[in-house]
Amino acid sequence: MEIKTRERLFRSRSKGAGTEEIFKRGQTVVDLGYAPGSWSQVAVERTKPGGRIIGIDIIPAQPPKGVSTIQGNFLSPSVQDSVKQFLLDPDRGRPRKPLFADDDDEIEPEPSYIELERHADDAPDPDAAGRKGSRARDEQEQGKMVDVVLSDMCAPWEQTSGFWKRSLSDPYIRMMNTTGIKFSDHAGSMDLCAAALRFAFDTLKPGGHLVCKFYQGAEDKQLELQLKKLFAVVHREKPESSRSESKEAYFVALRRKRQVDGAVLGYADAV
Image 1: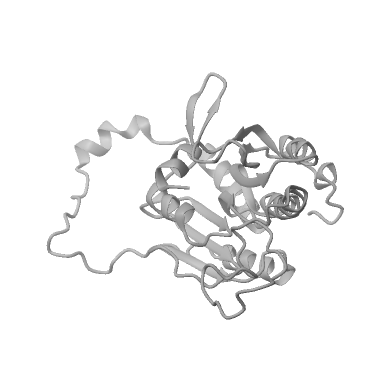
Image 2 (image 1 turned 90 degrees about the horizontal axis):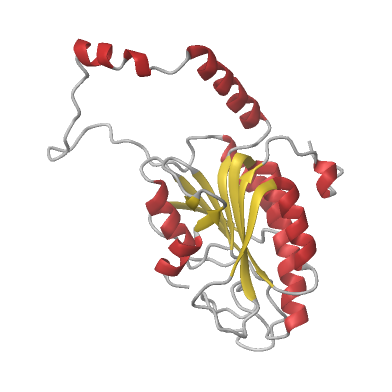
């Protein structure tokens, strides 16, 4: 999909709320199956300044500027653990402010006493801020560090040719193509969506969002029901650039619910 098409996908309609923007400044975004980087590129632009984007893919690829990456198979528990460890440090992967301002950079002056007095009534309630900070620390300790999870993964298929290729088009390890066999594509995409959903359960902050590519079939209704247990709003979206006969679609799941027991989703080992 083109960048503009992806930007349209990242706005989702909710009842009475018009168009909802998924991205905000300073967010942490995890892009599963990021190569070649179109989604990550949009995320970088929408979360700056201060946002951090982490991309994971099985294939080696040069990420867009401002994106940290981990190469590996996301279905591997060790790779998922590596991503979670990376996320635990809230500053890791986040752009750093320069120590010295360039000559051309404008430095904002300190607010005057009069300005401080003028905005005194707008100051946040310290008790409310304290409660919010305490809740944020609890979520951080539980690994809830992510604002948005993007999943554009698709399952690879058995390699029959092209063994000499070592590029983004490598037919064995590329996770962006499909076999053309509808059942195989659907079943593989459901496994990857299930992995993305579990990762979102483990790492998404309350109020966070998940965008997940899938191939339509018999099992996607069950996936949609699972998503509705964890998120306040779930949309199905079909990209405008997608062919009419294509089974490719996306679930856009908005606003993770605060208290959802893992057992509801079938996660017996969930914390």
